[in-house]
Amino acid sequence: MTAGRELDAAGIGGAAIRASYLRCRTINAAHGKTFYLATLLLPPAKRPYVHALYGFARYVDDFVDDLAPTMSTEQRATRLHDWGADFLADLDWGSTSDPVSRAVIDTAARWNIPASYFADFLDSMRMDLTVSSYPSYADLAKYMWGSAAVIGLQMLPILGRADDATRWDVLEAHAIDLGMAFQLTNFIRDVAEDLRRGRIYLPQESLDRFGVDRDRLARGRVDEPIRNLLAWEIERARRLYAKAAPGIDLVHPTSRDCLCTAATLYAGILDEVERNDYDVFTHRVHVGWQRRASAGLQGLRGSWTARRAAPATPTGSAS
Image (cartoon, rainbow, N blue to C red; front, top):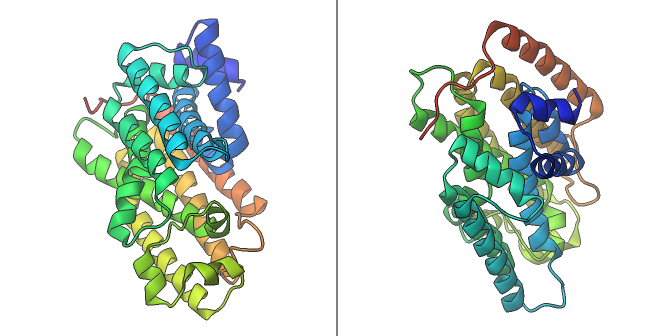
């Protein structure tokens, strides 16, 4: 289905707002390949809103990393603070001239997504300018709340719940676990990339446990301490996936294959790290196209079945 037909199915009209949603879709397709594939398993009427949420998160993340390197930390933090304050003001007002923010502000209004989720996300992005490591997993979890957990919570109204008897607080707990599992998977895969940006997202207490320091990671050679460190964090991520799994059956039937496929492919990154002997330095680990195609086809069959058997409209909202 073309992007225009998705917008039509979602009831999105007007040249400016449609252009904004299309830009978010392009960002998702270019940078969130696994997430984008999973999004295509949703009913067309849901897809533009998920593209908007992902596009916005990626847009802000890139904004942080692409701020002029000649700026001081204080200047970079001030610029992000000012941009974030403008966005939150526009979110409260309900309108903006920003070509990406326009779609996410429209999405937030349509689905009653709390502004606090976006504020918490911006707080975590500001942390990236001043925080380069996290002493404990509890400290890292505070960062992941804003960088990942709230994105799962933002998506819930769009995904919908299975029925009116499904408790939102239970569904939200599973969404938080899944968001953090995705984020921790990225941290494990992107150790080298993050280190080049001066950041380590694996807890210092884990590094200390296995005798790994920043210099050892910077050498970019896999040894037994690094294998043990990554194996430890992989098991932590898998526990999060296991805790999140029951939540998939609690979302609307037409959204389950999207979540299941995303979880399968993201968790597959952990398998690939292990298969690659924990080498996260010489190249970016990814799930092979055969596994991606298999998961995508299985999800596609399931999503077609679900759409025929159930209405595409999510049940209820959290607000």
